[in-house]
Length: 314
Image (cartoon, rainbow, N blue to C red; front, side, top):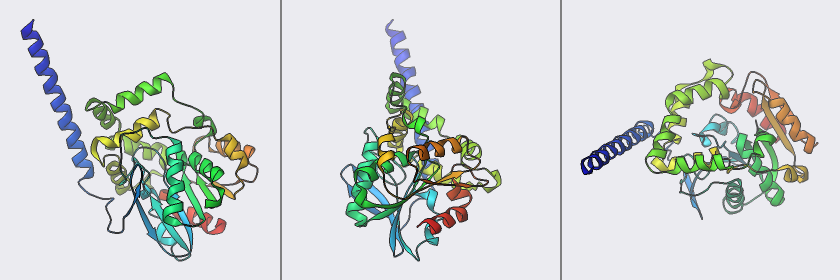
């Protein structure tokens, strides 16, 4: 019996060591290029961690807020920023848990991000700000505007998360999933298996881009790097996103927001017409435009179309 216990212990120890080495190897391979590092990066010392941001240009301020999917960062807007600096003061940031910002071990919620955006505008920008936000970040931007309307000017939302998806709150199953992802070594290993180069390539082909020929290798590599920065801590925002902890019902806030809102939809994105029409049903002042031959990330696939809408609306 003692020999069996010793053997099992030895095998378990060897397996954990091997998994740990695999985790470390993937981290090294994905981050060794340091693609997201830049001498122009600034850091805002927020109460829950350091927030990386960039500032360029002069004029009325625009804050760009990236999506909450794995590998997301302010990089998704890099093809827009330099084309707007003549008339606008442009801010891009990496949300807590993403990109080059800190990734503390905590539960990431829509309310956390609402507080972050509110504090960032108050303490860093310091004046009324227009917003460009993508996907799953739209809900907390709407609630932030509802609670602090004096901080916001016009808002542009690109392919917002559907109202149906936002209402999916954590269940026993998703809470268990979050717990599994957050376990040491094993959770990191599962996270790494789910977020390989192949999985990012598939997501870009199936969800992010309409024209596959527009997908560049550097897009994939930047998303891969963002998904691994800070090592095992990169998984915490993913665990909360998967566990539905970032969702909330925004119907009340949506009805009462009184600001000018433009919603842009990638014409080839699944169910986007239904999604945007549902938003307009609750707030009739919302303007809607569809971008032809694009899916979820037109700011990467067809930046000229996004720039045209920004310049017309703002």
